[in-house]
Length: 508
Image (cartoon, rainbow, N blue to C red; front, side):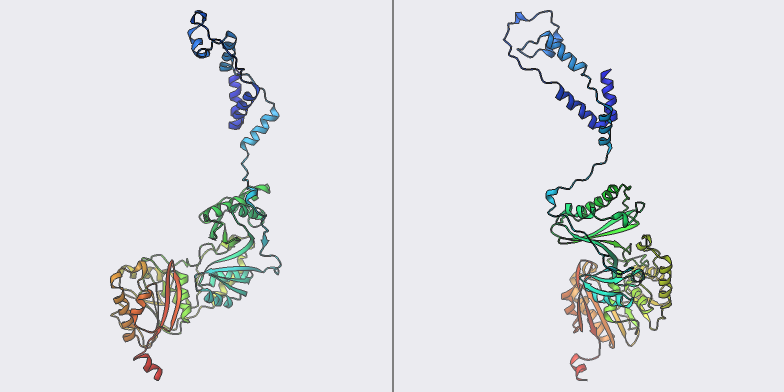
């Protein structure tokens, strides 16, 4: 019966309760004192002692008394009952089922992080935003921000910081062609390790940033020797956020990797930690028109940035002679018609924020639509491969640009120029896209020869990672702009095309 009672207590208290009984037994019953036994002859052993008891309880050479046999039997088959008060049982159950609190090693924290609020000392309704962009597109992004009314603009590396209100934030997400994301900085502090990151994040009133019924996710970009595992840093931030809710007596919010209600961006540079809200949601290069693609397509933000770098805004004819899936031609048409990059997007992350103003967003969209302008010149997109023509046609239709882009299956080296003058932006095969590595110099030499003899009166721009192959073009560039296409270091070179030699042109 005592055994069944112990089992009941173990079920109620779980593993911790079971360990307690074992520990108390060990403390309550001391081991029998060792006694010295004199060696006896075989005759001294009684034949009346059962053989079973001899084997179990009689150590070799050390005969055990009947008193000890009895004691061992009791310990083996009838554990001594140890009554525990109801108060202790309740305490043990609470400890058994209470979630473990995450402890931070105090030795790992040199000093408690001082968390600073980014919105402090700003006028009502004003806040800072940071637009993220690709390398060497900062100047184009700055000009775009000026056009939508942003102020206090500060150009940073691959980012531009600016002062905004709700209206400017909505315009930034709708209009910006070169921005990948628009972030709203919330807090920043110093941290030298993940424990300090956790401690700093625990001091933030996350319950005032978003409610418990909102799902959230964490994006991260980490550039620090102190944080060698970026995903672990993001995990510690997640722990701090949910623990903060629990500490305030609030149910924790859930994490959603896909389509979260709130996106938190963690940026660490050295020992500087910046926490922001992502106002965009899906990256802004996802315009919504790319339904089909060929191998290694160009990013939409990069394509738009290249066009803006040339200064072209629709004042002449435009040719994309190696269009692939049509991205450059589509971005050119949107620029020429003054259609915002994400005018057709159906949802932004800021629509889940507490201060979302639907009427204001509708106003911004109406004003943007009123600024559309008709296309005054023609845009040509040419491609030799049938599968690329098919992909480009699908994407052009998805972008509602079928009436603005002339799609042709033509070979750049054989086709005639479509007009007497205009601009060419070319994204020829290179890097992973180049299938003719051995014939690369000849391929680029043909590009240069075709431009020189067939496209006089045009300006041509070429992006490529094949820096040595540029020499095979045999034309003097007017511009050399370093760019980054994915992980490839590239150059974006401009050429003014004319008849005769450069010396003859200068003489005239």
